[in-house]
Image (cartoon, rainbow, N blue to C red; front, side):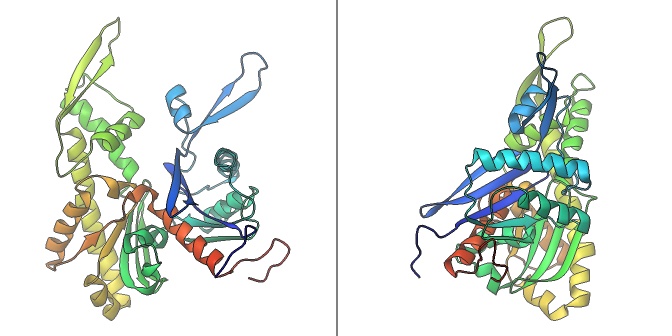
Length: 355
């Protein structure tokens, strides 16, 4: 189907508790922009006015007061909705996103209808998405890149597990339809950061204390379950000088604990629920690849370890896969859906409410 220059631009968005990702087409490839979902407010020393900075700059310049406004995964109240809207408006401006666009955004697996509505309000408050704005489950969006560029996931029966910063979500899909949705906040990527910080204090016998932002950086830069190597860092000591320390097990032990807990939760809670409600689908899905997505799935060796432990727990041969760069997969999958809307002319003008 031929398209004119007036056709809308497809855009995929994931506003996450830790990172926000915007995906746009770049020729035959996809361009992704990733920003930490946080802000820090400060007072201008000359005017006395309140200002805010966002993303990595906020973390670097105001580590003690930076706020990740979506720690629960969604903007829960009016204040967080306004903060998220301010943040996302900056994202739209920084990426020069086209108002003449079809926008698809990923919806976190959190049982909070008010928060989901607030997330939609955040997207709709910006100038983008004049032609269409739609939200789809994050676990579906994140699984799409794992099965290729042609939306093959929409035509499959499979299990998707999202290992996010604020919770673990799992879902059975039957040709794009959610069969069973499971979510728990008892295991979260953010919790791993706290475990790492505690482990470091214990490993160094109390000589080193790191904040959770530093622990997160250790996790992302050094975390690995297949080929972990000890690393060295240094802190400033009171009175001058630095103290150099080496981390041996603190990071990998926290990640290993996370995987063990995640496997137990999926095997003991989600899969029995799926089997009870849809036994035939359950049996079929175990013979298909299980998709891991979300930020924790990007840790080297985690997917293989998860597969081995879940298979052993179930006493069943299973195949676990993950999309390339799982931390951006939900936005890229959302973009693929948006591209389908554009290619099929399934969009409408702002003054025409009929797709």
